[in-house]
Length: 307
Image (cartoon, rainbow, N blue to C red; front, side, top):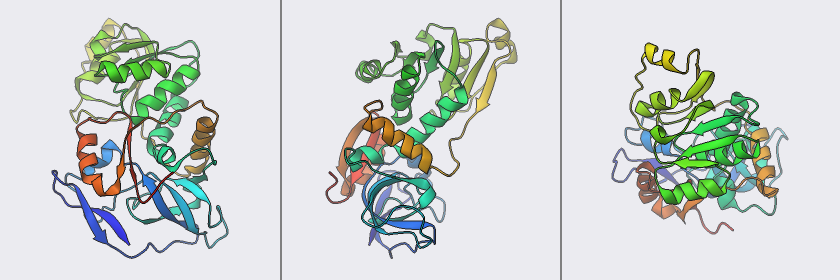
């Protein structure tokens, strides 16, 4: 079979290679991949790939071999999965605790855009606690996670201010429920009860300054690739006793959260934002555009025909 492997070349970060079909563990199914979605963080890993890196965490497709231990769906079932690696290939092995069955009304392209971004959004909002009536600032809101956070937080009753670099992307966030759109953190009119911050660099300090005293900032990324510098005494001018919480989404099982995301999509309460769909022969080009922030929301690559 074919799979995409790292090249170490930032101008063409992956290329096709021949490989054997994955050997499944007793609690894994074998999936014929129909669509997969790269994440921006994966583009950073591809710049200087470590030995053994086999990329691909967000996939949708058809089970062609059920799990030997009897867990999970049977062969012939379409699913969305979040394997630890190896998803950018014609076939992928996925633990049964990290997949969910696709409803008939959800196409593989939309399903593939759900796992990492959607699970991150769900778990961030659980970490933030009850949001009804609270003011929430979302920085870096134009990516896959940001779109899901905007829609889910607004539906939970939060008054959401989203930071978006462009008017076009901001308009979509407004449609998803954002009460206000700003193009820079410095333009956000606080104070806010909660800040969800994936950018790092100067944006984190600027967002932190807009918290209420005792408010919470959840730091879940460093997309700017710039370290954060904070001054203790700056907090005394406003967000005194603020809580800064480091957050990482990872932790199996993922299946229950995937099932929740699928239910929300099927009910029309969550809308995957797919800014680019292309054949997987164009993966290298799409990865560059994703890295350079030229794609709104998620990018999805298809293998064969994904309806």
